[in-house]
Image (cartoon, helix red, strand yellow):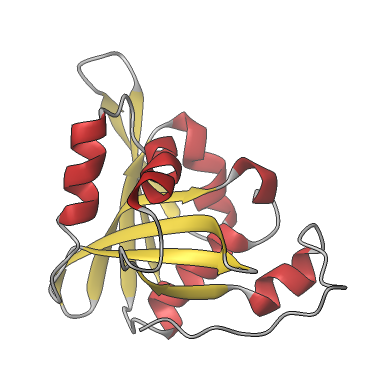
Length: 163
């Protein structure tokens, strides 16, 4: 269940310290967040998404098991998404992570990674990505290994962090 925090009018969403301190991260619930809004942000972490594929990604997280979808919000505005899967108790795979363009560079992605460590209690996380997100994972402390090119000529990388 999602808890709400009262924010003061003086809170500036462009102030990254204020934003990351007051960031709320909670499990996705269709009653709390419109699926279309979540799908729009999730689409930024998917190569060429279709509406059906995005709907399937979201609906696959509806159970208490994995995969799980988490929402990062500030002033009840959706600012980030994190979709994780786990096959072992201590390790998870980040299948999707995205931060709204307006809020990038303010520590939200880093807070989502910290959430995996601090709240979900994983000791290792991994992700597969392309060049677009490589800098993000590197800045968060992930070790990077090249996987070569995929079938479309895009360089792919495996990113691993041990907490």
